[in-house]
Image (tube, rainbow over all chains, first blue to last red):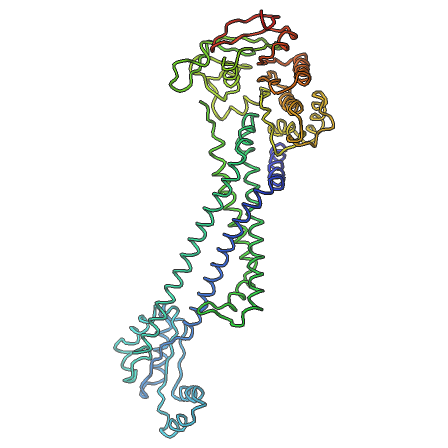
Length: 314
Length: 227
């Protein structure tokens, strides 16, 4: 046991010393790792910002069902309860005629003519049920529930608000958000794969330069794990340091963008939210980068050393 | 201690074997010199003993280990029992003198305390005291070869194989190295030395095995180069 611990501590110690003694290789390997890990980090944050933008849009879109004046509160509440049971529904609010008028007045408080017209007509605003979907794709499900015969009976001749031009706009947004979400996920996967391949090749190059060292260790009777161990530790240290550097770079980029960019968003990319996301998820992102860096470094060095560790006895 | 029985080694599809039915028997504590011109098969012989290569036919037994029964995973264990001094030193470039010698002990799990105690003693034997912190690139050829010897003997192997250890050295340094090998032999280690340095062979007056064209052409005790 004592011997195993001694061997383990030697492997770690040698790996750390090799990092310093092979500083030029370490810098080359780490430069590549930093660039790729930074790209991965940016794509994770960008994806989070897009998801947030989509969520905000989704939050603002609701389907309004207008109820006939003859509908009782009990019938309305029954319909609300039924809607709440739907898996597609996030939130349902019911406004009776009075509340609907108040909301209308509040919405149009700058347009006195409309308010006066509404008052003179003796509250023409129907009681309204506003249904917020969990996901924009699920609006049709909500619409189907509303169009069921017994539910349709309660509603005015005006179909739910999700119709016509608005329907087209919502469909366009739904489509755009779906595409963005897919692009976000695919880009993270693609960048992670590219990152792994580049780092793997860099570490393989570094180990190729030291293949004679491996051969000598073999000739002296060192076991595979004792030869490979320090290389794995060394690569894991590259991964760890690169992860920390990439976080520092992204942090600096956000600090710089705060002062340099006046706009809080670039198109659909909400910079302010991205910044906030980075700050609130700092530790998780750091951990993710460290795990990714160490994992890729470790796996790459294990694979790269394998070919030089085989016994090639002719 | 070392037994080669009708060992033949042929590379690829070549019809001329590098070693042809070579039989050698070396007793424990013997000091044996293998001589022969370049290409005679000396290095092939040593590479077979360190299991860098496998014989095409024949049997090899070293220190009781039958190579026919040796599995790849057990090769490190075999190499730990044999000390090898290579002609091109084969020092680890990223380790200093002390670390290069200590490495041979580290891989067998010797404690740090014991390493700190043993390595300086061995460095003293090879006259490298005070050069512990030097990197291999900062040493002369003779010094590097002595580091290689220190590394080979630090585990006190029962067998030491030295492949032309004086090949790259001037006469003075060459003799320093040979003296170290003699000293080790006196301590009880079997030494197998290959060389084509006539002067060394003549002065040592040990058992000399002559290899020519892959065959053992003579095997004489207390011999000189031209016997």
